[in-house]
Length: 429
Image (cartoon, rainbow, N blue to C red; front, side):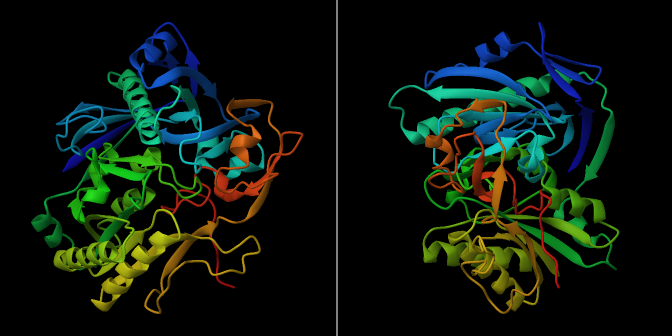
């Protein structure tokens, strides 16, 4: 597949009479946008703007989505939700780079998180640096949680598609081309370089721990092969209500740095031959099935090396270690990306599972690390103790009387993201 990404740099977002991109500014017709987002499951929807450097706290955040639009080629953004399930990943897509849609509102699964646009917390999340279009939505009384999650998910995807369309006829500031040939051709490229694959673990471990591939809940799939460029067109969508620090939002999927970096180094350091998508499971039987199938597919590809990234922690650690161990036993060198839950003092066991064969691991940081967040002048969403003290990373008394918060960095969206989309890691001493 050949995909061109045209990046349109957004330096500011403002409300206006017409939704358009002009001289690097995204203007939004608020009334038109909200009219397109009405959902009988949502009693209230509003739009707020949050910009880098402001004394603004956004909580609780459900998802983050980058506005994009398919300009040429088959399919459309977010297949299975906003558009049909035609295969995406080829043609031309325009990206409003620097803009981000955030969905916010009543807690769904007690594992949403926060974004501070300034202060020490801003250093831990990439979304303190984006021009944020924040959709605040409250469900109708008595709405079941899964319907609430679905309503918020569709709200964000529709908004991102609507805003992305404003860039359809705008000349990009930068265009990047990606060429991913069919597998027989890919395997013959660069015979002098090692063949490398990427195993992409997607959160699917239990209720409200959902990720979607072409609109299908990945709990229902066996590991499968996809083109790297399909991810860039929204083939993978987040439906997660899991710990904020290491959840992959839809924005993270669209901008997966592992895929972008592997493509960048393709033909120079190795031959990047493709992506294996796998899920994370609850029962031992399901874990064995998926890890067996993952190892089989990677071996079938003829890969000599693998990068594998986890999403979440605890139970999914077993899926990660199982897959890594089976790949290593097949002689395929494997590097794991994860984060740690090593206790607030950093002295506890970092992962729930381990193996002596897992000897190449990159950490995205310790999610239990405590941070003090100062009070903010503006709260978008609900910053009450009923939210702050109960979301993952918070505890009784996390919200102080002056509006400051003492909590684990687990509460911050993207703080220990296991795709490496953060600024925390570790070094050998």
